[in-house]
Amino acid sequence: MSAQDTIFYFFSAVLILSALGVITFRNPVYAALLLVLAFFSAAGIWLLLEAEFLAIALVLVYVGAVMVLFLFVVMMLDINLDKLREGFWKWFPFGALIAVVIAVEIGLVMMGDQFKQIIPLQPKASDYSNTKELGRLIYTEYVYVFELAAVVLLVAMVAAIALTLRHRTDKKSPNPSSQVKVKRNDRIRMVSMAPETKE
Amino acid sequence: MEYIQQWFEQLFGATLGSTLFLFAENLVYIVAIVLPLLLGVAYLTFAERKIIAYMQIRLGPNRVTFFGISWLRGWGQPIADAVKAIMKEIIVPTGANKFLFLLAPVITIAPALAAWAVVPFSPELVLADINAGLLYILAMTSLGVYGVIIAGWASNSKYAFLGSMRSAAQVVSYELAMGFALVCVLMMSSSLNLGDIVIGQQGDSFLNWYLIPLFPMFLVYFISGVAETNRAPFDVAEGESEIVAGFHVDYSGMAFTVFFLAEYANMILVATLTSIMFLGGWLPPFNFAPFTYIPGMVWLLLKIAFILFFFLWFRATFPRYRYDQIMRLGWKIFIPITLVWIVLIGMVMQLPVSLRDTFPLNMWFS
View 1 (tube, rainbow over the protein chains, first blue to last red):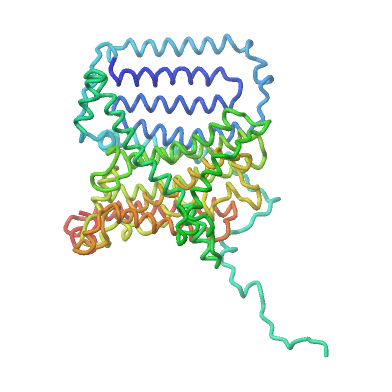
View 2 (tube, chains in turn blue, brown):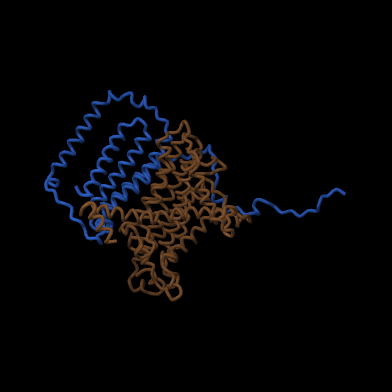
């Protein structure tokens, strides 16, 4: 077993264990933190595939931004676990059905032609840049698909803002730009007056 | 070096020996980076106290001498502080989550040190010369916020929790502006490798540095860096006048000191990245005789010290931002500026070659 295999099995073991932890831990904060660990291990496995851009993007976007906000929300919520677990057995058959469907779908994909022949990964030349190759593909061959995906995300973002934006009239808020523009003469008036000392 | 490698291979066999040798070699390099860094952190705290003291017409630390040398009064202070921190007891609050409470400082300092792996100190002196160096740095610096959030939650205290909430929102917002500012840098250098970014700024003088064409981005990056490291005037995560000490209010002893180390290591990192990406890294300001005699690493260290001085100067000068104003600055001012500048740089890059080769533009776009 080479060093690379050892690293692969280590990252895979951590990934699977932490993913199991995400769904079994009772404490939602622990679950969220284990999800972070799972993302991190997945990024490590991608690095072994010489896909450094995807690996770092996974850490940057999911670990660095999405999970931070997720953790933020999980910590703020006062989650009542007993209430959450009330309907577990009632909904269990439904959940199991979905799990079976997903498993069958994954199986069908994995048994497809593309996964039949295993091509060993050829080590790339040292000047090969995964980032550059990915950028070249995204901005030439798949540019319309890529922009379409960007527009879909933008629509989702605008929709989320539109849904949560409320114009409240009963609250007071300062106007920072007018505060910044204030000059000394707007607030104080210099008065020259004779000294008032008691004789 | 080869002698040691042969010795390893004799001792552990050919395959295991070479693997172990590679491991040991990198370990030595890591120690060679981290030790001077931690020493730098210790003396940065000293410099901070001295500089702010002189700005406020005080003397600052002036008692602990360095091995009894009388004219180095105060220079032993960081060492004494470190010894004191190690001796102190780490108190874990009763209601705290003990595991996460002790894990948080470790999570804070690990990315602060890990990011140094790709920093080039001179053309040859870099631990990991990887292609996606800039992305790696962004990913590592974005991890630092976890330590703060976990510390705030695990302390089981309202002040600590408020501090961590503030920090999380602030760091995530400023990361966007920071990333966009760096997009401009990588557009100009057309490389994500930090060494190539510095080489892209080579020329006759400091006018070739990216500081000149990307001056607004330099400001955005540097101010976002100050905000990312939770330094004054953006230190609302600590906010000692409102929420006591923010996320580390319940920490004591070495656990607190590790947070402290991480903050200063991050400051040095931001200063280093600013010098590499905007101030030409190891390049001398003028590419002729007296300046080129000085080795590149000295220039880099001088630039780092110059930027670090600004960090301390800010702290002595500006009052703390109000929280809504911090958010406004990040989202409504910095991000629009960076977006405009990205489009501007893109337009210049698309100019016809004959126009790009005329005087001011040929210094940066080639």
